[in-house]
Amino acid sequence: LVNPATSIGRSWPAQLPRLLDAVAALPPNLSDAAYFALATPIFAAISGDPLQLGARRGDEALPPPLRLSVLLARLAQQMPEMGALPNALPLPALAHRLSLLLHAAAHVQEAPLERLRLPVHVFASSEDRVLPSTDEARRLRRRLPNCRTSPLPESGHVPLLEARVDLARRLRDVGFTRRTPLGSKPKDYVADFAPP
Image 1 (cartoon, rainbow, N blue to C red):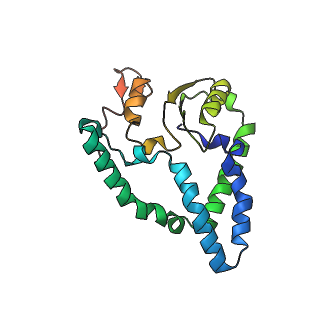
Image 2: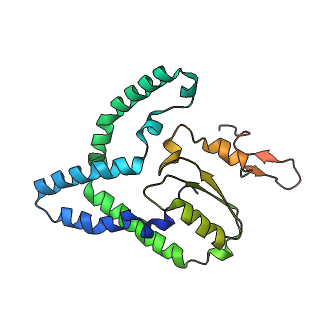
Image 3: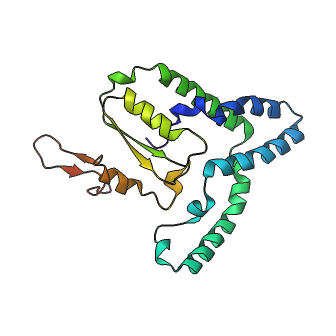
């Protein structure tokens, strides 16, 4: 798991349904304008550090001034896409998805997680401004008998979109991809992947 949303009930997005309901109750043109005005900063807060989102693996090989100019050019190219997010995720869709997420997270709070024996590894971003990811990782480690956690230092809410987070490498580093099938040598399901 990466920044598990099971903690959404203890975060600021849990307050959004009332705001989204109020916006939806406005007359159509005003509702659309209000949603667009609210959604853009909400999506920006969720996406985290723009410099990390614009970076790519391999950028560190560039000299610092060139690295910054390449990064800023990428961010400028992404600006129209950021502004289009409210159209890509309209108000009714966001409200519905958020209600599903809140409902599922509430059920997980009462679920008998102690009975789950499968290995679970939780990665938690230290700079997540959306969810209390590090607190939730500790809570899940206490409730899941076969759970380990790893911090993602300096990462925000969407670390898998950040250049500095290489999930495959992190899974290998913690030994999560290693499994030993009966009667055979250990297999690394990431490194040994053979496309169909």
